[in-house]
Image (cartoon, rainbow, N blue to C red):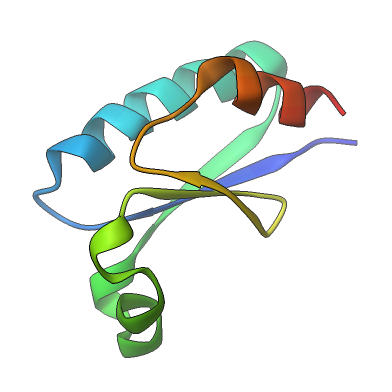
Length: 79
């Protein structure tokens, strides 16, 4: 089964930019898809994720936030 990583992000967020580069690399290596959602584009997303961005979801389930833990993400994507 192919997994999908969703990066909850916002414009002008350095940590989000770093996370995007790491997620793109890891997903490319393991064959997973990924996408980015701007939390500021939706009041509900902004209320839910607020100051925690970047937040990472794997297959719709929150996996982590602020910093990509590569080994943990790879493990989740290999299940």
